[in-house]
Image (cartoon, rainbow over all chains, first blue to last red; front, side, top):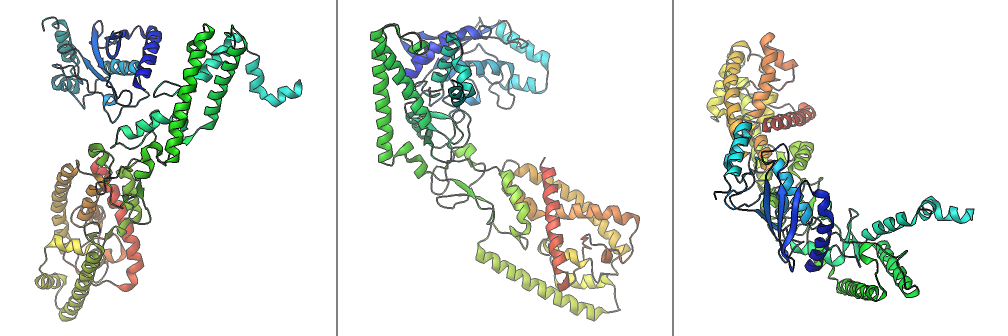
Amino acid sequence: MSERRLLKEYQVVKKELGNHKNIISSLEPIDSDDLTNWTATILGPPNTPYHGHSFDLRIHLTPEYPLKPPQVTFSAYKMPHCNIEFKTGKICLNILDNANWSPVWNLLTVVLAIYQLLSDPVTDSPLNIDLSNILKIKDTSAYYGLIEYYLNNKSDK
Amino acid sequence: MITIDKMNGLLHVSVLSQSKKTKNKLLGKVLDSTLCSICHDYMYVPMMVACGHNYCYSCLSSWFTSNETQELSCPQCRANVTTAPALNTTLQQLLETLAEVSLDDTKKEKEGEDVNKDGSENNDDDEKSKIDMNTFYSSMEESKNEYNMDKRNENLFGKVFINSAMAVIDEDDDGIARCSNCHWELDPDFDETDGNVCPHCSTRIRNRVPESGYSRTTSDAIGGGQRRGGFDSDEYSEGELEELEQDLQRYHEASEQSIRELDTDNEGEEGSGGMSAEFDRRFPIPRQGRNFLHDDEAEESSNNGDDDDDDDDGDEAIRQRRRHIDMNQEVESDLDSFIADDDDEEQELDVEELDGLSDNDSKRNRMVLQESESERDSDYYEHNDDGYVSGDSLVDDQPDQEPQQQNKRQRRYKVILQGSDEDED
């Protein structure tokens, strides 16, 4: 089931990616013979400190996909965000948990959900405590400043 | 012609009169509706979940068995799946008809491009479409066989609907969610951490355990039933509970008896201060403990007999109460924060249990204070049934007050429950 679905998803992604140009600049398998490892590039949503930057995602699909969620991470040391572990790029998003995942979601919806997470950080389940605390006390300028600092220094790491 | 149109219905007429392009688009949509949203393939054996969504038998089966500790839910709408999905024959027939039509057409016409199928199924040349249809039919055969085999062996959905239990609440009984397999009590919050499995028999619970809000309403409705005579019925077995109640009853009788004795002894000589002092000597029980035991009875006592317990005593009592209230509020909030992480039901019971000590007292007396500050004469409590406890008084229950007492008790539970709700927030 998994392989056939992956082939179909590949077709759908190729067809539909054009509709999400402003959000996802690329979503493709790393190797076109192996549909279990994908890479995606999403653009920073407007009205967030991420605007104007782009972010790379790694997507690994286990053999159990779509019954189990895909494993999605940002590149390490590249993503300052409340719900993303800076050191590893691990994402805290409920639909990526076994318990909340549903097999009707596909790669495209997952990437769109992560894009949404960039605009709506959740301070209640932080993986980046510093950013979360700044956000909690609504210190917007510090929040923007810190994120911009990280983003502009990302080439160092 | 007109009759046929009428027979076919409005929609038939309108659809059939569309342009070829629109028809193809429509057909594409119809074909999409035969796709399973899990495997994105055709549903050869479409099974409909109670919420109305359809999936392949094999997909749904592996979805239900993939995550053993989760409750069963519809992948599309997350609705609980409590009953086994049924074969959707209409959808199955639609798919078969579509396949037959396209097969006929490719056989008849060499350029079968016109009214066939949409994008992916659209045949470029005869050879290819035949191969496609062959794989289609073999897949369909395979899926149907799988379903029929499982059905014959009574192994549908990996027996998940036979081997799992439901969380059931009997409102007439105790209003607590129980495992339908072993009747073990189910914690409303346990699925958050341990998954939806019965802690006793380890059977998978296929529906979500109802929220604690539910148990609150039921315990509100059954009021004193759950907390009989001041004892939390959850903590004692039935036998123990009865024993405790009998003890309590005997204690009441003994205290009534001695109060009557005291009344006759002290008649005309001393006021209630003396009497209650004597009473305290005879029954040296801490104030809180007594309130707890005598919760309801003690309140009644203010209505009868204690004429002398007025201004001096009363003011002193009120002052004490004020301190009490402060203290109790503190205790209460501490308690709330302490229990907040625990499950709601337990919290509620704890608060209920405490009402004799704190919540009830403070609430009641706040009310009394408002009134009593303006004007209060010695007959006040006799004529106003507001349940003020004079603190040091304990007078026998009058049997004829029983029904009224019942009402009062129920009403008070409601007040408490509302109050405790507010405090939780």
